[in-house]
Image (cartoon, rainbow over all chains, first blue to last red; front, side):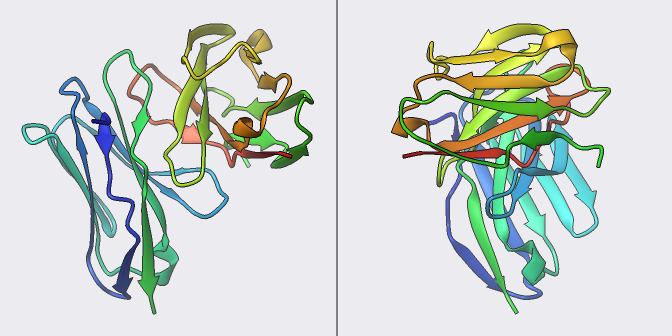
Length: 110
Length: 114
């Protein structure tokens, strides 16, 4: 079992839909959680950062962390064609480097 | 642009040649990381520097790979005797603090070994 599991998709939704992206993990020591957006042939761009459990909202994006279930989510409201990209979850424990999921490829259709 | 800068963006090389990539982190960031990303996968950790000291290397970093960060500023990643399996995107990231602080990535160097 990989430390971080993420469904690679692809996920295709109509413009305006609410998108839910998820990752599960096995390492209970993980306490720092991030979501990155990566456009084709570009570097990852940091979207959301969360420490430990809870929710964080930034504009149309909401990140949730449920440490008891080892499950993290990213919600995108009112999705736009410009949101079409690969979304990577990443997490780390104290003293360890970021571990990434495989990424979920999202297409928002106008 | 004050983000993480990587050069070159693309590199095509023949098998067996040596290549070197450069990363310029965000100026006040003291930690610099190298990751490798292959098609359809997430980035995988290679190594990191705290200022000029290289503190950790992944088992992915074979002895053909070497990284430096002279004076704690820019960093270079060299691959000697390249192999086709080295074809990947090489990503650099920097952070201002320790583990768990936000990591900002550059645009990457895409290496193709032919």
